Image 1 (cartoon, chains in turn yellow, green):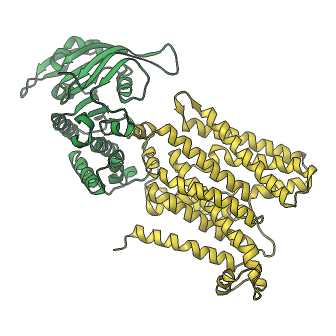
Image 2 (image 1 turned 90 degrees about the vertical axis):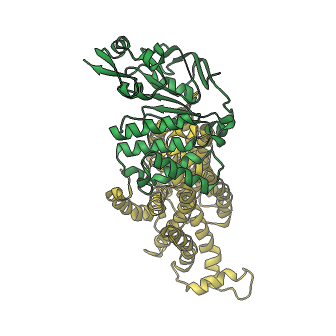
Image 3 (image 1 turned 60 degrees about the vertical axis):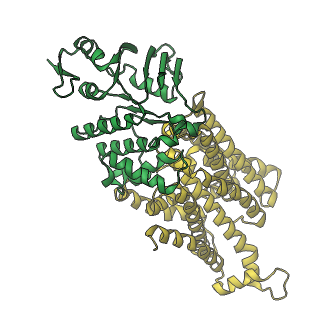
Length: 343
Length: 261
């Protein structure tokens, strides 16, 4: 017999490949889904390669893979952060990683523009590197502020995260203030998030990090389930709480850091997706973590498709679309929170 | 016989303010199969002592639990703790909450769900099995949490050397009269299977009726420790709570009953 829960899982899992197909088929040039599928089987130096094959293989496929991986990372990291902070309204950006990464990227844009041409590949990877460094630095600061000899206080981490976010935010604003028009445009575009820089080299980086984060995080499911009771309760259940916290923070920092570095700040995926999944299957992390990854991939794939097509040939930053899709949905969730036992 | 838990001159200093003393060289002990009640006014150090025994607070002196494992997972099969406050605000089903207690165990899914059912029944909460925890009343939540800590040390076979210790911090605060009696009777049965139970209680008459030993704390220090008859006296009640009282004897079992004057 198929329970409602099993049905939900099957639907969510089936939607992932479907969303990939949609992302491949739609764009400035629409390609029928069958042709899109066919294009994947053609090899690049085949004689039968046509224009739509090239579009799919060189532009849309890396972009779709990147969208799926970044979405999955944001979704699973969001679910993890909410569990770790025991707060269903927490967001991975709470530990300062997003703001830190933004500041790092802004610094890279500001100072690198004088040395090299930012349009090139080296410029892009320099920004990504700056973002990753900034994100990592912010997490280390937040973590050390909240840690003393007695362990890490997640409540203090939350407040420290707000402080670091404010500092990093004003640093970015200062750079925007003193930057020229080109820098300003680059920084604000980057802040809105976008997958337009997708390339196979970025896909490889995303794949390496996703492989680590997406396989290790689900191993913490039981620990996260116990952590929802409270930290000392989890310790009384025989869990090494301090080590678990460090592991979770590192994985979330890596996951969010790399996704921000590759695709800019993409709002609401990490907040809304775990929420929807919890609404569908309950707070058990053994289901919640994998489903949040799948849901994040679906949302980002569809959002990016909308971002590319709605004002084609102009592309919207995907962060705008996820926020525009996510925020109203989130507001409706808040209005109905009593229906699923949240106060 | 060596007591299951021996607390010897334990002092606890506040981790925040160096000079604040939460507990000042307190000693007590409890045997397997006994219930030790800790009584005293608010802020006397009752919860601090429970936390120290649970391993959450640093202390001076010695706390010796007979046959306790050092490995956290095995230790969790021996010692279960009910804190004063529950922070859980995620919409788990009640059965899922109690199931968390089986994390340290390897008894298998089937046996675990049996134990969950039995523990819920013991706390008269089996009818809540599929409800959302966040939608329960305060007393119902407390019974579910009690079922959870009971389920954690449900079987003697799971605990190394049969050592089982149950620490309850004010388990009766949200319970109605009927469920208070139900809880105390369930704990008494649990104790007869060889579990040592330590509980912080505010209801002196409940203490007098069910506890085997009583530790009275006043201003971080031990005022009295011994059997209920020794500790629950009009003088001690006056010293602890500044309440004039008369001690009568329970018509059925002869335990002391405190009558406020």
